[in-house]
Length: 295
Image (cartoon, rainbow, N blue to C red):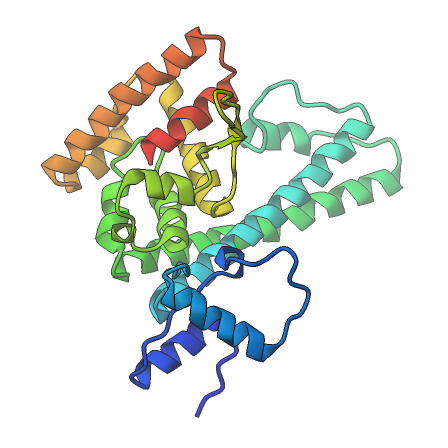
């Protein structure tokens, strides 16, 4: 029998043997603050008591195909971070020598032309600069290969139709949809949108007592990758509602009900962003404020 090293693999093995198995996150297991003794026997008895009392919350366990796609998406995320770090070294090298780029958008065609025109005063500096630039090229090619693999495999997943429908939303492409769905999983496991928002850590923190109500920033207690994708996509709703030519191609493939939801979201979230901005909220706060609404 093949040895299982992961929690998901162990869950699938026990389920295949015909036994009911629940996976519970350690952070969701109630514990006594003064309990300093921990043994396997005591843990087993405590878990049995909590399960009988209904105090254990089971977490969703992905299937093998879903877990494999999540590995691919997270590998792409690591590759993007590596590319960002290598590009940052190029920018830092130019800044150290007073060669700042005046425009906001970098690493486009104009930026690459300007970078290629840079001439260093010393041979050692020219070699160091070219080596720093060359190191970023394979990282970019690696990201492109991983994204091509994601684009090819996402439609084959059970959540492929959901990913196709998500692309009708403004600011969401197939990569963003793949990140969200592989991290969150089956959306039907949430009874209502508030549960999904709480899972993503987009609800405000709160320390209230009596008549005193104190709310702080969002909890950020959920899945960081899904939350980051949702917030990044929400920035697109700062602008007036419109449908680009590229997005129109996605909308033509989507059902009418999905197109109507996507357009209503544009109207509602743009209006909400403007309202929050008019109240003096910072753009970052306003975006987080209705990213939870978009969920």
